[in-house]
Amino acid sequence: MLFDGQPLAGKKVDIYRSPMDLSNQHSAESLDTDAQGRITWTPARPGIYLPLVRHRATAPAGAAAPMYGHNYTLTFRVLDP
Image (cartoon, rainbow, N blue to C red; front, side, top):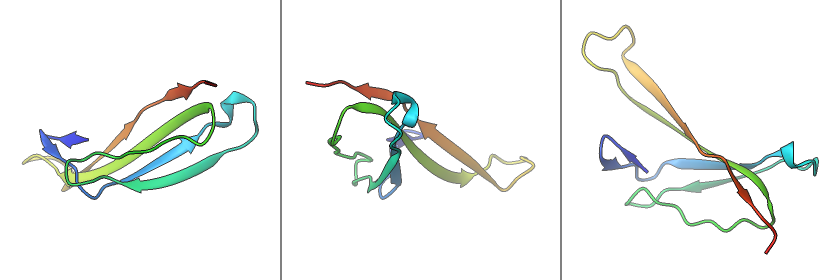
C-alpha cells in the first residue's frame, strides 16, 4: 500500500468476510503492513472479502480541515479450490 508514492508501514488492515455470501457468518481479521506497505494473508475459507485501511494525513495548505482521512477498500471473492 502506497500513499503519495511512499509505503504505508505499520498500517492496520482490517479484513472482513462479507455476510453477502449467504453464510450468515461475518468475521474480521486485523493485520499490519510491513516496511514496504505489504501484508501477507491466506483466507481460511471461500467467501467475499473486504479489506479496509484508514489513513490520516495533513490536509493541503488552505484546506478547511487540518487533517484529511483516506479510506481504501477492496472487494474480492475467494472460490472453492
